[in-house]
Image (tube, rainbow, N blue to C red):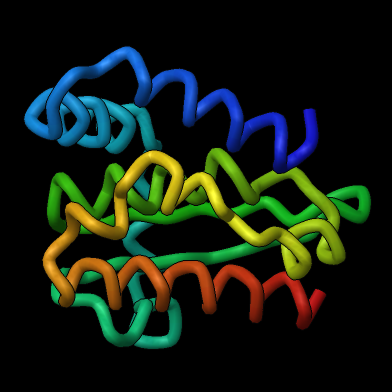
Length: 135
């Protein structure tokens, strides 16, 4: 499944909810499915700068695919990074770098996040693309 297919899946999933209370609950549930990363990976180097909460992000390359691992100390933010890991993980560096991630606007997420959280989401995406570019 390519990145665009995953984005469409998420758009369909969010269309099932009528209001943002339910959509936030779904984001929290996504975060609950994200495995924690080892304590040894919760380092300054792996922190995503610009996030109001603490978000740790690591990446590894396996068979020319980039695999992301992440965690956060905040439930909504953990859901946001879980969603980004779902979309971008297990794809080639080129696919990740070129992904436009239009699903974020199509589900209305950017409009419903506080500016600090929206900035944090942008920083998560930026760091994921930087990891992909470094290969």
